[in-house]
Image (cartoon, rainbow, N blue to C red; front, side, top):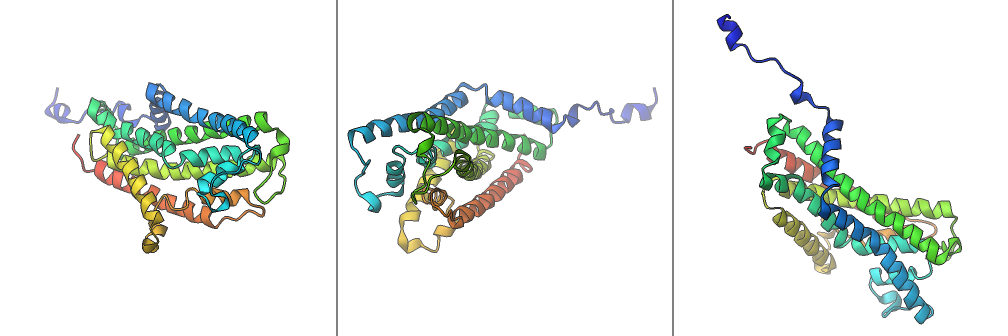
Length: 297
């Protein structure tokens, strides 16, 4: 054998060119086999059922469904009051209720497990030994986190619609303006809110991936994301920081979905919220890629 043959690089076997769809399929199988992922998704799916039954019982005990504070109360409380005997508002109210904590928790957990969790267990190195480029790795992990957020919101949306229709029937699909919607029109508006919330959760997941790429402690990622969510919410209440509010991801999280409940339907806050989410999504994924492309191992 010649010296040139000995020193020539080994030919590629195709092991480093595994198609992205195959990697994504493997990642999704791994994600949706985790007991904690299934537990979180199951609990989120139960929320609309619990809310619907609770509001029905409360409405039956107190006709009119008044809540303390009335129109002057919190937007979330007003939304819950409007969901009494209203199959259209119920799924939206349930999703908005979880938008401040439970849904971000699901996205943060997925982002934490995606990189920090695998780093802690030593399985992330296997992706790089395969080898898989850092960019493809991030794409696969981002799709996995996005899938968890999508399934979480979809599960709440489905159980909310079914619960509302079972408890209140198709004659209870009316807006806050008092107009009655057809079943198709109501479903279209509910899906619009669900899509908007999914986009917000994708932004949270992107931030979680960025934090996850800097540590190997998943709980630190979850704690950091939820702490940031709480801080953003508190800052949103401070009128002295009005100049900062347009940059807060959580701004108008509870108010924007109310636009869908009006007739005619507005879209100002929904549009602003969607634009903010896209910006956070791009920045979060960019930071995650920048870190992954420079870290060792």
